[in-house]
Amino acid sequence: MNQPIDRSAPGQFAVCDNPTIHLTPFCFTMEYPANKQIIFGPDWDLNRWTTSDDRVRGGSSVSNLEPTALGVLFHGNLDIETLGGAGFASQRTVGNEQIWDLTGYDGIGLHIVPLDGNRYTFSLTDEIPQHRPDGREQSALVWEYDFCASETGREVRLSWKDLKPTYRGKPVDDARPLDLSHVRRFRIMIRSFFGAQQGDFSLNIQSIGAFRETYFDNPSVTKESIGRGD
Image (cartoon, rainbow, N blue to C red; front, top):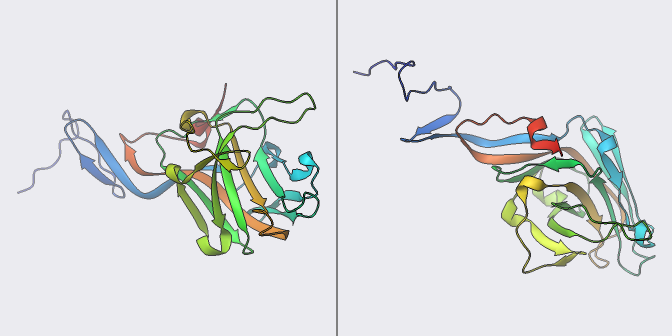
């Protein structure tokens, strides 16, 4: 016969109905189906984003980020003529004080509405580049993930190991690990891939968030605790 749980006794835990809880002598884990903590969206603050197109290098590509009923619309025109086959258009987060602590998470999820067959790039970095004498930012080590919106469906799901370190768009084989406790910038981009794509583009992004497959010791994490400023 099962005995009732004495919730006042040491070592007993109040168990919720939804998550699956595994007890061990020292801790317990609660497994959720792809639990996600939203970082951006569904109500986007566009003051936290800015344009970063190839015009800073003399190109002619242009991008915009506009609010919609489904989040934001990343759209514009990717030009490859001006730079002889190269070209990129992107939107990135702004500010030098913002720090996102993503430790304890397993990766990033983007909820999107595919509107074309273009190949896009999501990236983040743990450093803010210094400025050159002409005011342009120097290059920095960036971790990237490419995806084709028409193939991924409505969710782009990438684990940390899927992010590839690059410098000025080129792979870095011996790169240091990404500091997940000190993420400084997010970016969504489209580029030509050396002339493979060009012209108008459009991608609806509902939200960007961090996900974890398993919770440890029932942490209480909020959107505000992920993003912090020094």
